[in-house]
Image (spheres, rainbow, N blue to C red):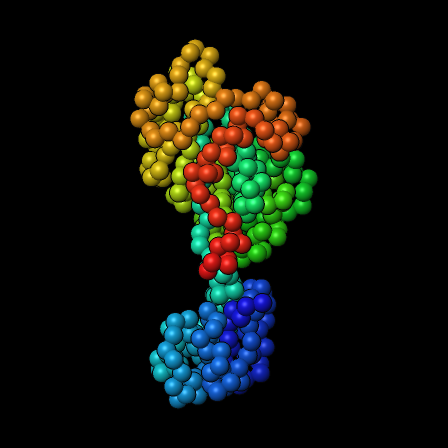
Length: 358
């Protein structure tokens, strides 16, 4: 395991306390009992925690100035801040008040800097357009290519994307469990606790009345998602709410799914204006067949949006969704081919590859 943090202190009680916080963050930390012992590993970890008892020793040792150094003390006095400056620390952590902050710092230090996931939102121009199906199919296709993928259900009244994937009985975290979450969320914890099938993890809602999700919880979730996955696909309702708006604001691309119908096209015109308030890159997806002969080109011209492509509705899918077996139905067909094209355009790299390249 890579060394995430080095603790420099001669105080056994402080060392034990900081190691406990590191364990809570699932981060590997080691203790150096003095500046000389710390010298060999000084440049390795992302985080260096210097106890107030060792600050003068570190300052006198002539160690290289570097980022990520924090002075840990039990007294927020002017002397502590002077010691922090002398020891080259950029922050001061006061115990026990800053334990949560330190856990977050340990968690951040323990995660590889391997790039950010691509976030893709999917919105339907009308009810029943098939946005949830498209989002789930994109997640399945990405996971099938070995991409670590998170499918997020941003619609508390949509019935749950976990149902169409047959994951509703799987144990794991739902939005209800994260509703009051505060602080940094470990990517490893997120991946391990969500319901999943292979490389596809799913965050949906529990049955019954939805609970309000705090802004801090939404922010923590999407922050962890882009740090821990290759692709994040979000099923966003037409009236997005706080979760949907947060997803749109973090999205690299938003796909607006429009059936080849006159009313759906008119509805998409107004919706596109609303979407652009929260997300910059909105692309059009046209779904056939057209009951009245409206062509995909005509829809594209009417909406004046860049096209992400078209596909034909697959008649097998409604039955597969009712059976919770969308994965089987998506092994082939026009929707699967379309999703493969979208993923090829995104040119995503698997998380493991990004870790090796970092």
